[in-house]
Image (cartoon, rainbow, N blue to C red; front, side, top):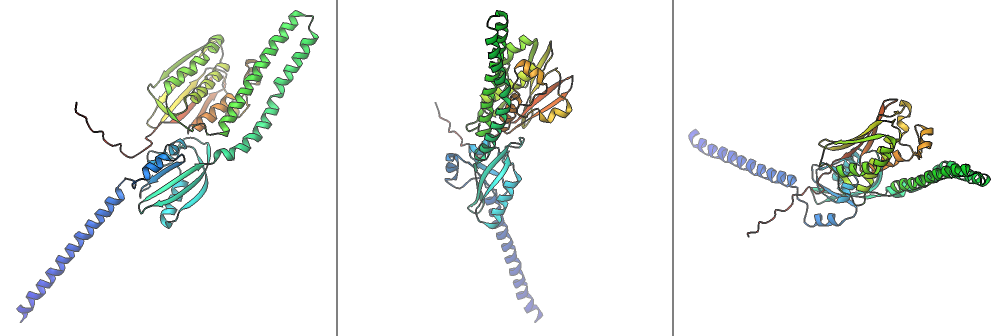
Length: 388
């Protein structure tokens, strides 16, 4: 009797074990399929074409928050670096939408790029895209927020700074009238009048340039720029002034380095740094311009052997109309706007500018810019070989 029960029990146990093994295999296969789906980095059909057509900054993230598709605007605003979102606040919004499953629109104040400290005001909308992807669209509202502040600052600064050259022009004109019978005095006052007129024209032009940089997005259409060409053009613009001042300009460093931005703007930034170095250098000496490339950053350093900057004034050198040496600035026609223009150009490129200086030993100003990365992380389609 016991032998008769043993056989069915053995069969039943075998069936249970076999069924369990089959269930485990099926579950493992399903988990593998789900994992393969999560790891897939292909955006849904049609989404890529829509993102490419958008003027706004737009991007698609997968389940691990890896950026798998971007529009050019996302890189221009510095939202993406190495296939990841730069800002923790954007990641927080994406994670919240992923948990709730509901789209969210928020106004955020963020920095431009991973290096710079320029502030952006963005209207950001995040929405689920299917079950595995997230869509993020950002509209730049920075200009509207900046415009009023720029207008206030412009009126305050211009009313203060223009009083000196305008007053000087008026006094010189009056002096010319009274010295009309003295040719030597007429020549003297006329020469001074030309200097003040040139200073007034330069200040007006730089105020216009600075206001444009602050009031608009200067990188609406960025392109790859050769840094060596930027440095060469900036040196050429300063060569005559350097020779007149007895200053030797020396360039060196990495070659074939590219950054993403506006070439004319970058030439202006480097030109202003070189002009500033010439202005505050003693004769004879030299100004060095060097380019350094790392994995992620390009640095353009301008070093002089001039008077240097006191420690208590280092934090103010990029302020508008600030001058380290008021007497020297007046003698050379300095406006106090050159370094402020440099700062805003570099910030608009997602970078920063730093200064090292020691009074009596010279200064080094360094522009730091992020190296360009691929704007689309989707692999390019392979080209079919055509037989001759």
